[in-house]
Length: 231
Image 1 (cartoon, rainbow, N blue to C red):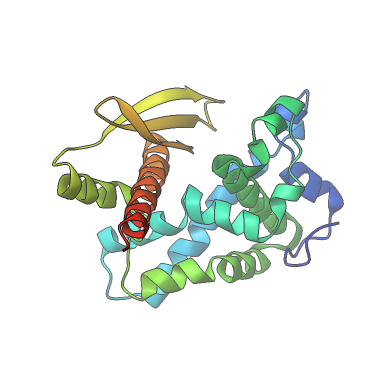
Image 2: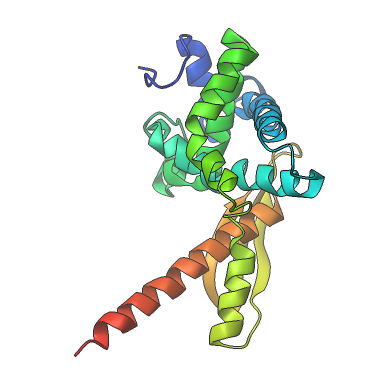
């Protein structure tokens, strides 16, 4: 059953939008990859138009940063989870075993594929409503002045300099996928020790995800120290 928050009636389109390439013999015809490609363009158009119309005082550089902070893996994956799409993603047994249904890159891809499916079934206006409704929290956050809230690399750089006087190193551990749908796995290291890992459709996205994980580790350690130092 299609989640009620998604304005989509076609079970066929919904199934296609949630089927990973590992779960089919013909990824081109039977997986979400083509819908994801299409939905990515629709998403970019809708968010760009929203920012252009609602922030007439922002120049091109600010608009670009704001858009990037919304249409990246983190917010899209979080939105997919909020919609419960992880329960519907069809993967191979090995992908399921490796946690593919919770992988941010897969969740983000599926959300974009859903956007593409909504557009194909109902057109741009319904697709626009769906995108803006689902991404409203992120759009409000940047409208309040935090234009790039997901710049975890800069935040990690600041934290690393403050704590260790060192700069983090990013390393591509793996890259693969079709030419139009590359996937990158990046590690962030301090003194050859991996402190965070991230996956994304570009090196930049994967680096941001790795930096976010490293920041979460640093914050967890800070909270633990604060608790153990209590009298």
